[in-house]
Length: 289
Image (tube, rainbow, N blue to C red; front, top):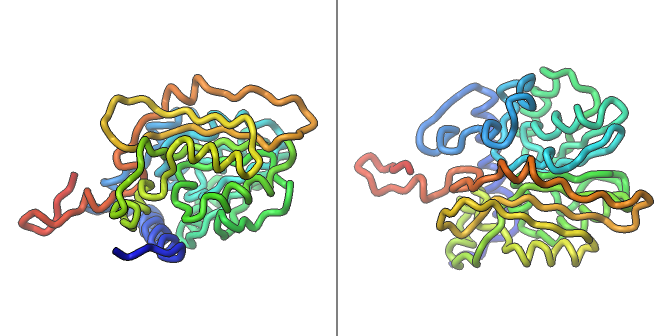
């Protein structure tokens, strides 16, 4: 069996999301493995009020709403890991106001281009997008108040590096609030090496205890991981994850929960379509879910 390298994984993920970004920018639909297989998730996790003034091209393929649990305040600096089309950046920009600043980080050129197009449509001035990877963030030490991310950390081939970098760029007292996929039990070796499942937010997911241990090893405290409960028999769940870099000057605030966790639910499969949704056992060579 082929052991996938970090470069293999990043290339597969970037190719999958780059194709999705081009389809959205062009206003195109497609068949089994296109946008219909993994539709825009805004209506699942964002209220109509939140999405009301956003362009249709500000899509989300996430598994939750990190802005609902972040408790953003005016003037804060926010970093969105894997910012995609920019949805969470634009929502954060509203909350932090003109004195605040939002940085969207993404490694995929087509997603960055789509985000810039959406930014131009909205005319926002307190958002910037940077190209880079989460394992080596192009962000200065202790320059960020809040990190958010929506179903992206699982895509990294090196989670400890992501957690270390997140800790590095946060100011003391800074917060991490992410939506992500968490495994309930280990995957098979074949599943771990499946690049379609990597791009579909499954193969790279961590188990709950491993996720918490990785954050703790990087120095985070007040770690909380809340899983969606939907009763389905699947090896993964959507989760809302909170953590803090200690030693802030201000008293630590309790984490927000109710409004956000009531809306989280399982995506099956999370993120993009996987090989299970595009097998070749039909007469026409394709079988959709």
